[in-house]
Length: 316
Image (cartoon, rainbow, N blue to C red; front, side, top):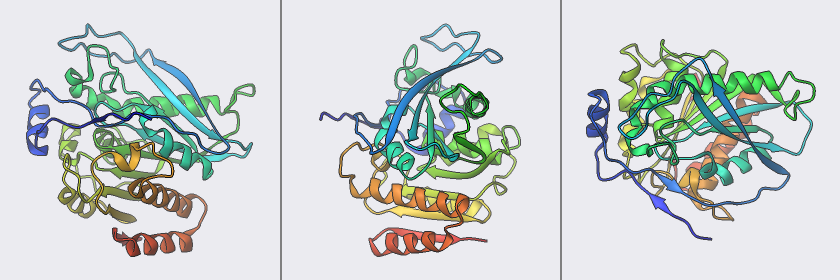
């Protein structure tokens, strides 16, 4: 299976933050690996949602649109039970498909997983995602809109999603640029969506959060931070300040030796060590919140520590 790796081109985090906030043109490439995998008892499907109430702005290479189109990939386990929902927000130059192996694993653990392609920052964005970075300020509303559509489908009798989602058990995992999107969605006054009951921030570009206002990010739902200790794009040193800035319940797992994207986007089976640890932490964290498996979550944290990962825990 061929895999392609893309990284942000040699720019420091502070330079990127300054450039975005100043609305300067950027020349960046995306992050992640391409590929496919299969998961037991899990099916994948696609829906396209069009938000007619908001525009897609023009870029230097795209004329814009009067609507926002969100192609959304779904992973659903082979059960008729009502299950928690995990939304996944990709990073700069990402796609829903880059989450495939990770998402299938979480779905197999008993979750409906959904990942939209953001209009201007996904790898296949019109005009190229390289010129669409500034559109990230619109992405929290994209996630709320997709959640609206999924919960509406949950109520339609002849829809395959009918009664599959527990609307009181919704979480979001955001990677890189999707991480700051998730912070805004759950912790900033501009964009807060109270339906989100848990967040997972994976290598989040936290320095960009001031684009959503200067209000603090302390208040929000229980949060798990995942960050590779060898991340060359968003340095691991940024994880501790983010952890300190948010209130409990909060957890941090430093994935030993992992770079920026592989813990979520590697498609290898059996999974590489970083992805296996990220999957274990994600399922354990969500199970503790939505299935009251707190003892199991503590055991998982102990196992992750024994495997060489760095784990901080503040249950509150």
